[in-house]
Length: 114
Length: 113
Image (cartoon, rainbow over all chains, first blue to last red; front, side, top):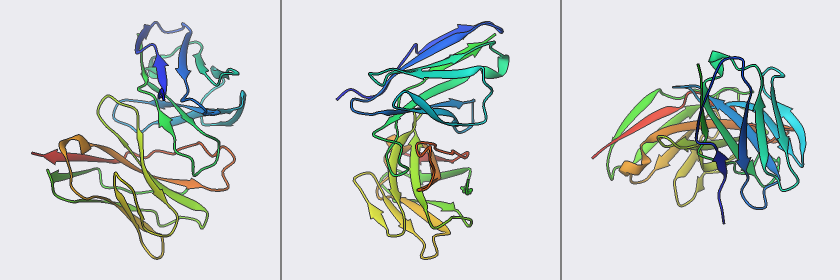
């Protein structure tokens, strides 16, 4: 069984640019969530997708957007990058949206904005 | 979201038990108590969860106070690989976006050889 994978591993972008991060969920998982983790802090919830629809969002501006595809893989898009967007971006998948389901995290994408 | 409070850091010796505390005095009746840990340079991983009764699995045990206002994650024999940040998280059964995990700053566990 393949775990959650993310690409790329590292990325360097310039302020104002746009970036797309990708996530492949664990097999059979229909729910994916994205988190942002700044250095030295816990991950912060960005949003969740369930069966290709966004059904929960944290305190992040609209320039953070996402997609979930029929095969349950997912993308996180960030427009108009700011220096504060530099962080580790984590994707997590689960069997469903219920709060008792385990979240399986990928290794993350380290984004640096200069 | 109900809030949890954990010590910033703890130390243990290899092969000794470790008790990681978590306070959650504002817990509601529908909040599950979850623990995740994050090893260096990795994403978080699930450790254990419970509602009212103590729980055991291959990784750890979770002891929940009778009034549910605190809990303790127990690693029975710490190994060097257990050095990580441990997060205690409350998840509301009624939460519509049930996947949402609200992380605090966690407890940095150091295991000494």
